[in-house]
Image 1 (cartoon, rainbow, N blue to C red):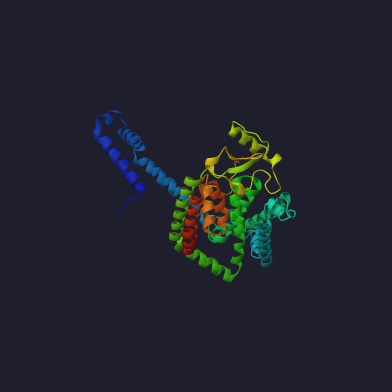
Image 2: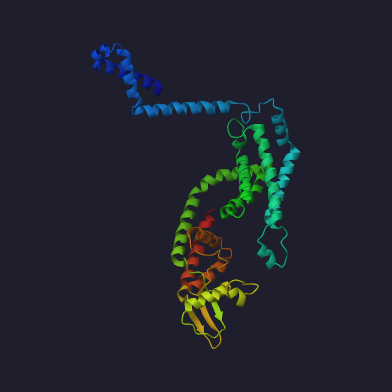
Length: 391
């Protein structure tokens, strides 16, 4: 029969006491308090024994488990509101009210409509229209959504409890997702302008899926998705391996070589320092050659080879053409292989076979065409036709 850590601790104390008293009986009797002296020595040795820390850790763990068990069995929500609390009863009635559920569902639908309307300002300008929702208006609308969803989360937390106990708020996956959306909304409002928040904001686009949880057929769809995801792990691993390999190859082939563009010089000058001339052309492009479509640098159709950087491409009678580093890769800097993260997104975009040629041609102009076309042909053929079809 196995002994508990406490029993083993007591037995070790007794053994050390007996051993100490047997080794020094005369000294112990001469002091007139041999037994007490032996107990003190034994206790000191046990206090410095290697197993003492493990015993104290086990006792601490037992204390924490007892505390968590007490909280779990506590029928009060948030360890404060009992079942007879008027506040808890009101929150429970309101959170389960059919009209309130319809209101939240309508807010979710309206949130999805607002997300669908949000476009970059330059997209509205390209279409010749004005921005329907300014930055201030968008912030106010988002604040309203966050307040409503936070109020709903607080209602359910007070009515059922938060994390510990039976049937608490976080015991349902739909509520966990709603809570994450609330946190992302609060972070988005408080840290506007931070690049990482823009990525977290993508979770808001998934929020309309919570509407499916309101209907039986929707719950069946979500349950089917939940059960099928584990079966796709092997496919996800294989696709991740393919994306990693293609991204690494892309960084090796195209990294840092997709920002060179053709700049014109109508001053009929023959500079000795072409690098300084390129610097001047890049800095003064907006005031000299900038247009409404390309205000800051030449278009993606004017890309030039990376090995022609800081060189004269065409020495004409009145106009010279230079290959200069614009500092911006194609598609306003979104298409490049300068780092692994951006390169992986480019590979995923090409694998969808949606507009892949708009990505491939600027890259082909910036590097050797046959290398770029062979690379993108491989990604489209293997990744788009075979790998993605495994799903």
